Image (cartoon, rainbow over all chains, first blue to last red; front, side, top):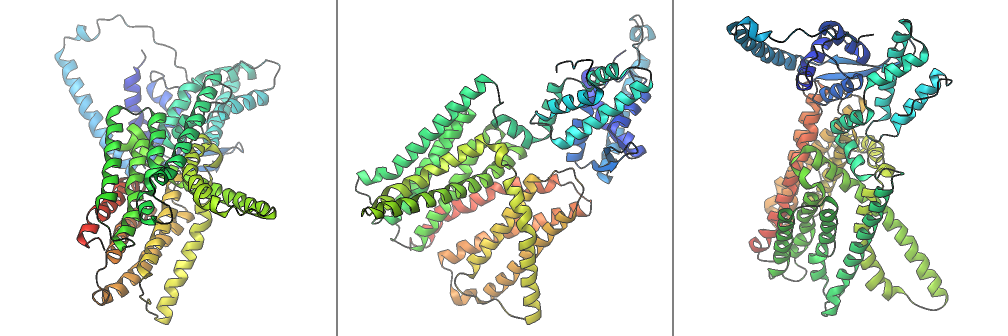
Length: 128
Length: 456
């Protein structure tokens, strides 16, 4: 199962903010965490994470700083700001509302309707 | 991208990839460095999983995604880069080159038209020297309609916008010429000074096109205005050297070219140069885009130091501001300069980076300018009844308030940003939202003042 494009785009803000709420991180590590959490079902093109981070930065939700990593390379770390945390809480409320709504309707549907399609072979998780 | 040869070492392959990425206008070197770090880490983890360098490189590049799509995303994220992408023609492509040539032809054609227009009144016996008032009031009409026309053409604006612009220009021409101004009176001078501000906003609407309602669109227009001033000054300096040499060599053969300068070269050159400078700003964006920010960085600390020294002197010596006729105008100009320094550092700043030393300096500059202005206003307020309300003084006072409000709120927003209570974009949004206010005040001066003060 792959998650659709629109849903991927819409969920990028809460996911990135939530990962940064766990602790400061950088691009590659954030993507690793996304793969880990979604079991590879949420497929992000690597490059696309960066414009998302920049957008969050522009909105004041995250801050970026350069640090020298153990490898000796300069690496850009991101940190969530208080505004980012507020945004995250708001996103959380909204997604929980969506989740509750869906749960309600799934329960009301006969279970066969929601799983009529034969289960597809799971695509291999593409995390490295 | 082309698949690198297998014999090439990994470093070379990465180098090639980096070069490819760097040629994209929308992705800044900082972003390229970040993406490269990502690529290297991905390769390292793939190699650790047992792949060869080449295989790891190919997979890592593939996972990075389509670079065209990526540049588009970055461009959308950063309007200033999008701006650059829109105006800088892609080097090497034949079709854009043809377009840039058409662009140059149109720009120079309009510059020529402006130069002709400035001499056209002479056909009807209106002379530059004898009818200085007419020229002062109408100077903008020889320049800005042509500039607006250039952007109408360039941005392919629709008939509705064209009609609206035409109405503004025609209405402005009516107000400039229908009032029975006393020759050489204050209100005439005020109209001559404020009309360009109103019409500059009309040029801005043409410049930004459909993006005028967005923060980015107006910000681009602010950037454009600053770069235009820099280009214009450069052209003017070149022109002055040209004129100087011309005068010198013609004098050597006993011909006085001064009348030619005064009635032809200088007026025509000065008007045409505005259109040419605008075209240069558009065409050579990437060449000069760092000028305004560099000048800002250089002068912000200097101006801040001067203002702090001024305030300290006032406090220590207890000297009052010597209120004479022009003191208000001097302080207006000071606020304009401080606002310009603020605007151009705002326009060039990466909104993401956390507050730094320069941001503190910026707040010091704005706050000290506000304090200095408050001292001046205090001194003037105490004696305003003694001076009386002349049109000049009311206009200068109005401008002072308009600028003061802007800077005061900017300082508040900036301080919030420094204390991490708000995003930097709030400062940007405030500045771009405020743009129409200048034009509204200038419109009031042009339309209401002459009648209010009896055309004196």
